[in-house]
Length: 273
Ligand SMILES: NC(=O)c1ccc[n+]([C@@H]2O[C@H](COP(=O)([O-])OP(=O)(O)OC[C@H]3O[C@@H](n4cnc5c(N)ncnc54)[C@H](OP(=O)(O)O)[C@@H]3O)[C@@H](O)[C@H]2O)c1
Image 1 (cartoon, rainbow, N blue to C red):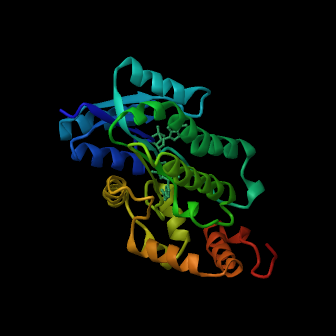
Image 2: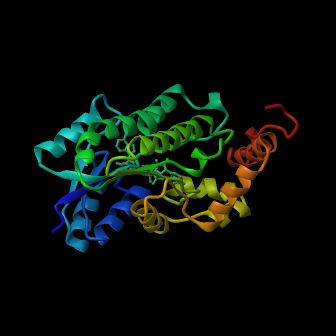
Image 3: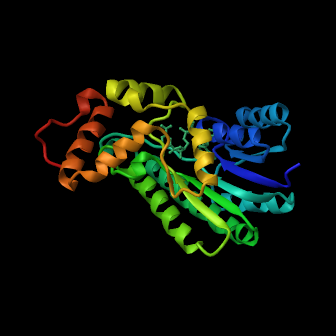
């Protein structure tokens, strides 16, 4: 059996769960990290049973102080050698900035950015000792184009993208390859489904499911891609977006962003940015 492990944060459901399944299907042992609860433990035992690999759960609130260090210590104590680190746990909220309580933003910034940073910081010395190792950070298409009305989320995801690109170059002379996964909308829960329904017909063209994203993500990771954008429509959107002048691009993105918040709260077309 493969002696190394792939560690995935946010692995109890959604994209993280699909990534864990995809790794297991490829014969890799997995370490599943998420909030403690029955879903996490069920995910680990189902994966172990279905794919015949080792699948260990670790329940923890990653936003708690020192949680990333506790995850690292758990691996050390159990002699789990991690050769693929997948920083996936994260969440987003969209609305007019002050409509969302500050505490939600504080948790978002901690989970999406600080936790990813600290996990990488703790695991990197071990990863660098291996002949080949990988880091996959789940960003978003919104980590490539600033999305108005999701200002905090899009900013956290730009951090993830920039962190991944910079670290990758820093590690160019090592065996560690870093990639940023930038999915478009992915249906992972009821809320996501409602958000996509509010976004209209065009958004539905780019919607994907976690089990479509995961194989593309791992193929891209093993090919050493810098940025992995699942879905041809999403790739075209990013190309078009990059080709437009900034002011026009931001006006279009403003329209898209405004379409996602509830209608009565959407700003008038002629209001200023
Ligand atoms: N869905 C999309 O449309 C989309 C698009 C682009 C990028 N992304 C990014 O993809 C990643 C995964 O998103 P998703 O939609 O798959 O999420 P999801 O279905 O909501 O799953 C989130 C996972 O993170 C875990 N988690 C949440 N808070 C945690 C905490 N404080 N400590 C430990 N674990 C925690 C959850 O654990 P529990 O199960 O225990 O709650 C769950 O396993 C995120 O970084 C997100 O920003 C998502």
